[in-house]
Length: 226
Image (cartoon, rainbow, N blue to C red; front, side):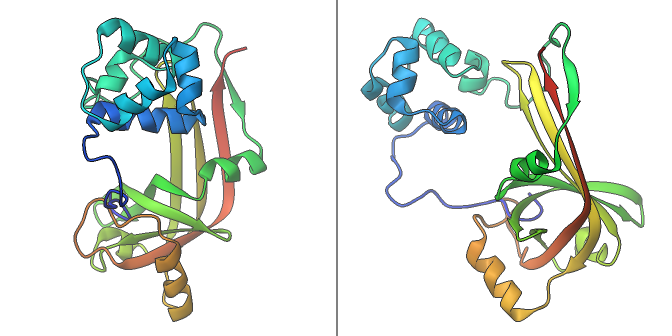
């Protein structure tokens, strides 16, 4: 992404891990579950879940269905067959409701880092850029190229948005923050941002120009099932 997207695999990561294994592990960690807990949910042993995560494997469709159900997702999501499609293609829940999030919830759901979207005005009109970001203090910081459209938006109002879509549960949430975009020029602050950054920009290239948005307003909404 524009501002912080690419990190090499951690040292000691399983060399035989497949896309299925990575998706399985990511979903399990997102839910805060251990391998043993996933095994209990799907009637398997934790070591089997570990094998699927760390080695090339071709589990039977029945096993995949049980694992997907245990993780609250679908076989299509685990196998990556929906990777080329936007999220949110499932049918809406009956009687779903949209509720406002508290300021505390919004800031918690921003998390400490991840991928979000920055909206700015450019010479060609409004534009939205996906970026890797990090939350530091009250600011949302990200990296871009020094000559990019985002860098030229310094000194203007910008919006920052993160969201999460759960296709299997047909639920979702979004958080929107707004404030002034500015360049980060203080050497100590730059050093601190480089130290706390969780990733290099996934988009690659010379994206070393730090910017930040200090929100003056933040709102969020969540789709819930009564």
